[in-house]
Length: 564
Image 1 (cartoon, rainbow, N blue to C red):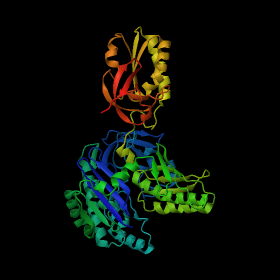
Image 2 (image 1 turned 30 degrees about the horizontal axis):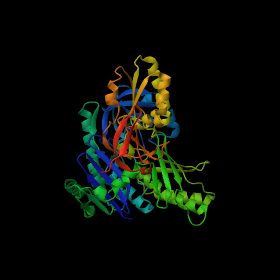
Image 3 (image 1 turned 90 degrees about the vertical axis):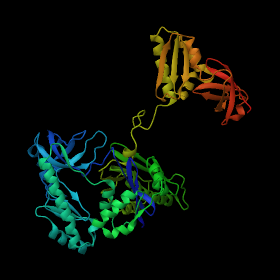
Image 4 (image 1 turned 60 degrees about the horizontal axis):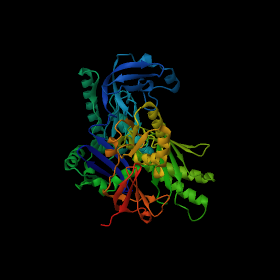
């Protein structure tokens, strides 16, 4: 497999994409106005202790207080247990550990997302190139990705030799095959950094940022750019030279894999821009013609698998299995690309044979192993759904690039014009009862205005008959489909001058939308919801033509095609 990292450095943001066999699988984005917080260490003050939640809120100087769970506040012995057994953890009381006003050193482990503040822990970790230093834990751990028992034993012996007294170490995957001297250099840098953090915490104000984690490109060098990466390409000469300087210290062998490519839009050239756009959509097409539908919500992410255009060649079960296998591979990629975290439910197409279910699960598990983010596949439920969890540390791609629609509030749906037409009719009735004015102006989105007017003005005449008012309904593209402006007017003549979007003698280009209901020789066009009856345009439906307005009535206008 060819693995490549592409770095795009722009004025307001830095973007990094990880590609496997030329296909983007991970995207990282860091913006100056929204710097990453995970890994930063703060000296904070406990603001509230909540025994009912077994947690505390810690003021670390950000907009929202940080959340500290009891298990993240207990003295720890190992990363797996945080120093406590399940029964001991259950009996621990947050009030015995933290007091209001107490000062404490904490590290952010989860970004603030939505209305939630960041999650913090007192168990500090300082990642290096080969090792992770845990100053508050006396422990040695080896990355699970190192599978050789002999290599694990060798690295454990080396780690024991370089481990500082009373502190802990985790040996990272990239340390496989590394000798003691390289580990010792790594640990020396990390212990110096820890002493500097303690010094800042001892004399600085509270709350206070005492350590900021590396910038995005530096983190990529530390965490992702390993021996199994074939190429690192940057489009910034400044960052390129800085990367080479850093690799002189941390990994001179990797310098041969670093390249400069100063094309104007490197993400466009590599096809990454297009993949990011696709990753923001619900539907993901598979090469076979099947597709996925991915719905992210507050509680979980639901993924539905469909055969779509794929009809197979043998039988139904074969078609289903092939679609599910392809979907399993794409689901793994989409989880990484979109950085989806939390609970994930996958509704694969139903399979009758258990062996086929296991085949799809195994394919999913094999693909998930490529993901550095911790992911657990819990199996198939009684309803035939696959349950998964993926650790959520930073916001998803959609949370970084998008915001909730201010009109639909993130629902992704708006009220139909039929629903809105009924609703606005009731508002017109209410206004007619409340005002003594004889004229009411209604401004609505063109599609809603057209419905209120009706074919040939039938709905408008009905409204005027029931309200006893003169109604002027005007379509406006400035009006969102779910908003309307209804107001009484005293000057009946004043409305004539500005209500109509067209005037006699005006020449304009319009699209013929449909034939006239009663006179099929004529065509109908609309200007901001106002109807144009175009003579002889019944055969020009779908075409955009120039027309001259001949006469304007209160509910519609007559026009005729113009030869140019």
